Image (cartoon, rainbow, N blue to C red; front, side, top):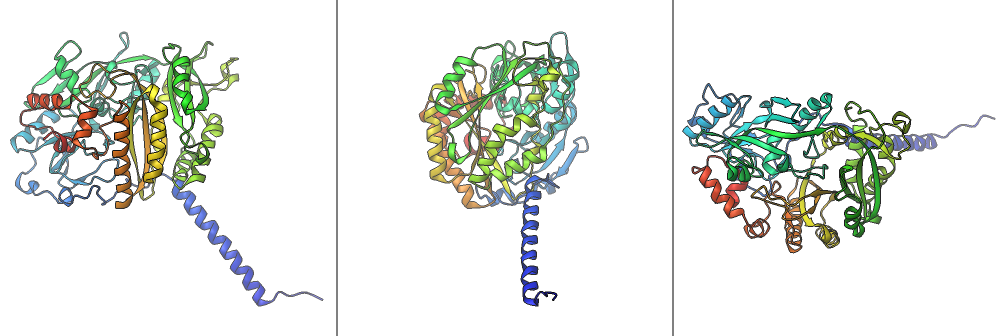
Length: 532
């Protein structure tokens, strides 16, 4: 006798199938949101700290018509930075491509009493590249490059990006000596914050600068170097664009080399000693940096140090390849924002999956007995940050603290306690190496230090912004208490007292600014808050 299924039972099966299908659809949608690149630039009307005045449309455009010789790409409207929390009304944005464009724009601003800022990729997160009702110079089209291969000097207009320089130098068998760890930034922005990356020697960009030309507020162009206009050289490097517009720069470049990439894991308390014994002063190591675990079971305890040793085998230098698996990196980063399980997955992926997916030669290709992954200097320094671009309704905030090397345990213990007590969503800590700086006035490294690059995630709301503000001020107090400093390109949460304790030459810097720019033509939100 044939069995039949009752209508109620069929209905239950249908409901179950629909439920499973809906779960699959939700999971697929979530996976897509985490892994897919953004379809457009992320926008947000949320501003923090709250300031309704900065989002009021400017009325200056009605009073001063743009000049024909100034190539405006935007008149009126708004600008923001990479934090997406700083939407600000501006007079306009000028797209410059020549020195004459810059001179004409500065002259226009002088005549009409406008403030001027220079902007590149706008990853400084405290309004360092714009100000309310200001005139913004978009430098990214000002990017010509010339190479003196015999003397290994690269002359670069400051709107060029590090990505552009890497692609330019690679066919010549050359590499930049120092740069930021991400290559989308402009050279001018890097000079203005005296940035650093994974090239632990020299560390900061300043020691690689032979000379530069700078346009002052009176229209004069000066050549600056360690022997010419020395005071201005010291003030403008790491000077946040407040002395003038750096036009072009002569940079040291080095040979592109093949390295053996190796990773060692250890307790955070052993990191400084390991670095001192195995990395510091070793000319055979071309690149080095560390990373702290975000996994709940080893949170800010297990530590990786990545080293790139010059190969003892004749391995041919391979051409630069664009990174693969960007969608996977993006998914893992975004998944790690969701909580402990996501962080555990990410740390395991970094330990066990990344070495297998990395762009490196196999041992058979290298015909070597050396253990490790073979990579070129250019390949390892090439990071376009594509995996950090996402379509989520959140923002990622950078901070950085410079701590004497021997005080790493105290800083990491303090960081762990502050993050847990304040409830901040910390998703990454990278450790870089910076050296004592006798070049820049706003010197963040008064001795050899470790730099802790912190990466926080937050949504666009006031509660999470307040959490991060408290976390920032707490960490600044921690750093200063350990004879350390903090980095100035980020959100302006610190007090004037904290600024002066970390940067005792700040008043000297502001006084020099008024000497070179008496009308305070060049400004930004950092200067408006702390320099007045």
